[in-house]
Image (cartoon, rainbow, N blue to C red; front, top):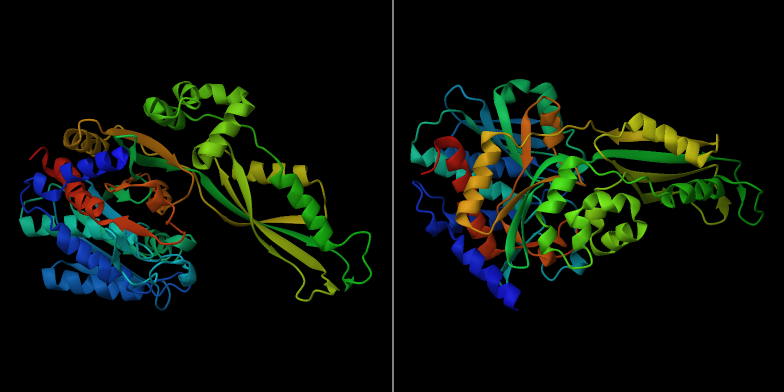
Length: 460
């Protein structure tokens, strides 16, 4: 209870009215827009993100802000708005409109209701990333309304299809409409955010991410009747191959960004984990320490090694038929210094069965954004000034975002959020009852704008 009270005290300190900035954003308006936005069905598949484009276009029309839209495929719409500025590299505020499916039977309110309950706003996308979109939008509108001259253009982009890889959204834009982002030098996107650890607010800024390598493993054999098992079959061969992969613990490695992030929060960790955060290189030679970390924080453990998760299986369409083919899909996430082709070759050696075929379904390249920039400095300065005890920590994400499309173009991209989330809220991302604390959201609206002010104009 004391921790909760401390958290609410922090949120009160971050309330938008406390900043007193010119053209301060309207947190209540942002919340109302978020509730409306959550009611728009953009579940992917199939996406229908053009519905979100219509919602945003109406706002830009009313505000007199120039924008462009595009569809990578029918219904798969994206929108880019622009505030003109000087000749400094442009800043892009990036988010995505598509959301993952939700099991309505497991939610306390309908997933697309945008309902308020017990101090929370519920809805699929409340955190990932319709909530971030409305915070960015409110900051964007406040900049426009201020009438202040910008030394660089500021763009706002809502793209389609991020949840399925971004090929019909940000990926399509950088390939087919590169003129829209030709002057962009900085991107603020999803992937980072705030947590209260003990009573300390910790803001993680994503500067790199593990490489997704999605694979299909296929076994082929002779079909037959289920009543007459064969010595070998496609399903049996597949299961043996998968066992070798899922039982494998790939060698741990410690990247500098991971070590820096762990050390920065070592004093906030439980006593049995604190020594490993203080000296994370100890984990490389301590299997029991790695197990303790995995039990306590699977996400932190995943930052130390390449991983593969078995996520999908398929075989016969009938219970009494031995199929000629069985398949599985693996969600592998590689550390940025791992060569995906070398990793696939290692899997083939590990499986050691020429009858098993491994096919790459999707893979990205690795890149790291430097923290030695004015934008990163603005995040640090603003957050630590607003909250004296706040910590800003560079981080590597286990998941992927659309930021990699921009890093591939040598554009600095950060995953950044200003809403202080609790563990119960984080569990709703891609899970049940996704929701955001209303007071935390409102505080995040003001704080996000303060970061932009610091970056664009210096201290107010």
